[in-house]
Image (cartoon, rainbow, N blue to C red):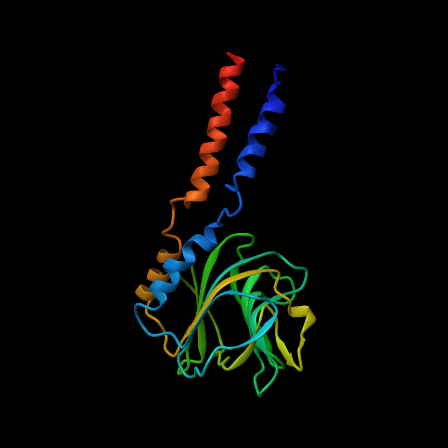
Length: 240
């Protein structure tokens, strides 16, 4: 019987594991925490609209919100050369956007009132990492406050966001199936919820903590890890 060398042995064992379908689904950290996040979002102040794994760009009706509002996102975004809108609209009398990165290539979160100004929170955008963002509107004060991963950054912009009804996710809606190309968001919007109130700091923190609470791998992850451990043990014995 031909004796396999180490590289060949590893290839054969990996093929066997893959053949069993063990690697078919290995959840990402974002996917693993979405169930907990949705449960937390629905356990306190009632949301107006909740969605997960949102296709971008697409137009979605986020419901009737006004006055004090909270917009909450669970995202993982990449850096772009221009800007990236999480949601935005230039239709139906709306002229606003919430920016994952403010124009032009600032590397900061922002909010825009088209035709007026691009507002910069002055908080560095976190790229290529799962993150929870809350934009909390105080309509009387005319400001929006930024929370990152459940923590109040203390950063505000002098605009009371009023985005409601049909808006574009991952871009800015121009109507007729068209989007503002310069505003394309590069990444994934895992979750979104909006509330017809300014959520308390405790509630915002609870939502973020729920999302990041999942630290135990799913069974598929455990199995593939076990398979690789077995490979390591076999290779070690062959070398002995």
